[in-house]
Structure formats: C-alpha cells, structure tokens
Image 1 (spheres, helix red, strand yellow):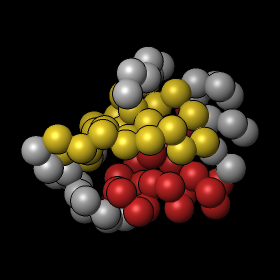
Image 2 (tube, one colour):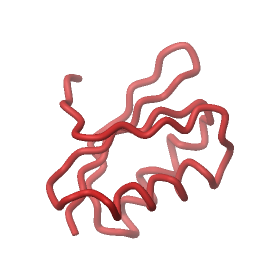
Image 3 (cartoon, helix red, strand yellow):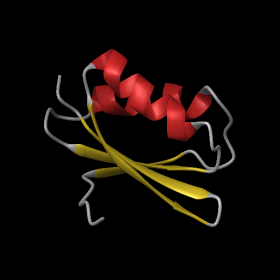
Image 4 (spheres, helix red, strand yellow):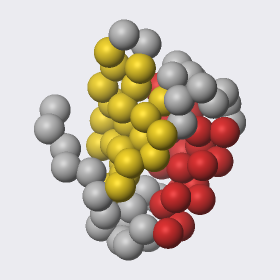
Amino acid sequence: MIIKADETLDTFGLLCPMPIVKTALKVKEMQVGQTLEVLASDDGIKEDMPAWCRSTGNEYLGIEEQNGEYRVYIRKLK
C-alpha cells in the first residue's frame, strides 16, 4: 500500500485511548481531504481506529503492520 500522508502523528509507546485522543486533536488541525499517517505500537489501534473513523465520519484508508509497529492511514472528510 502506498499512501502519501500530508501529516504524520507518532503515538509510539502510548496505550489506548491516547493514540485515538491524539489523532482526534491532530485531525482538528488538518484541512478536509488531507491524509494522516498514525504511527502506533499499541495493537488496540487495529480495532480502535476504524471504529473512531466510523463514529466521526472520517475515512479509514488502511493499516500496515510490521514487527509490532502499526501505520494507520485516515483521510479527514469533515
């Protein structure tokens, strides 16, 4: 998957719910249509981020997992 992110948010070492809290704050600063890459080490992000996107109306673009590290991509729609 090759996604060009406009912004990157590093949440390594943070546990649920902090990656989602930080994502919500970051998305508020972004323009509609921009893409955010979230770097995480908490595997809860696999379920939490798609659920957060559904509840907030943002687009979940996918996740990459490698060696216990996650890269999640979302697009701001509102």
